Image (cartoon, rainbow, N blue to C red; front, side, top):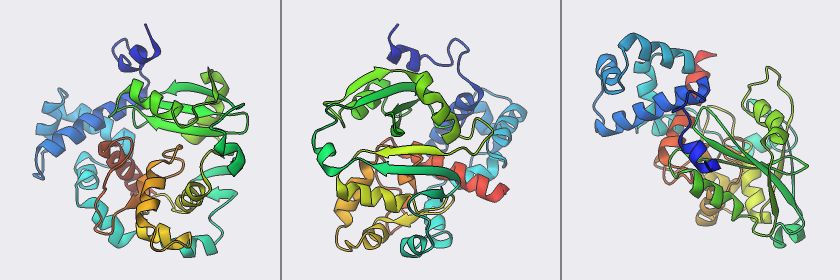
Length: 295
């Protein structure tokens, strides 16, 4: 059985962990809510569509997000992003002025980041060893990559599939040497997902062009539970007319979730395209909103 078969088959043999199981329930619920065309689905009806009792469905939801399924549906609604934009809009220039970018505590995690030099980036990863492994996450199967210096890649397979997600990440650094070694990465992954009980520092090693890294640095300034716009990012990096280029750089963010490209919205509040799938982006925003309310 290949690594991709293993990823596709998680849960079939009981090996899927509790967090991944919860995401599976949420992911199926999102599909049902989308299929309803904006109509509210009752707890009983939604649970029935998922093949669960209402009590069990309520318990899984509440255990996972800390709010009721009814409240969570509001976070998953298409209009929630617009509400976030109206109520939790982050002005990135102020965030930069407050020292939220760069080393130190960023949003709700301890992250330390450094970037590859432009010259090294131009080599396409030549001479670089990148370790990789698959992990379960609250947002489905996750491909993680890292160097000796820190995590350099994090992508999600729930929508595009494991083979496509893996090929996507490998293709970013075509001349690097890739070595499967999930145990080397596990301490950083556990820390990044808050699974180790400690707020230990998670090192990131950004591999990108200089313009891309400026955009990713701006993304790091967006606090958890808040959002911003592509035009705001463009202004924050001193390129106010570069909205399209900013959008492309956001889409090329190699460390999704930790570099929170899911918090970037269109001016209208539309979610727009998300590299790993709009349902994953919606789930991330809903997850953060629920935790912001629970605090």
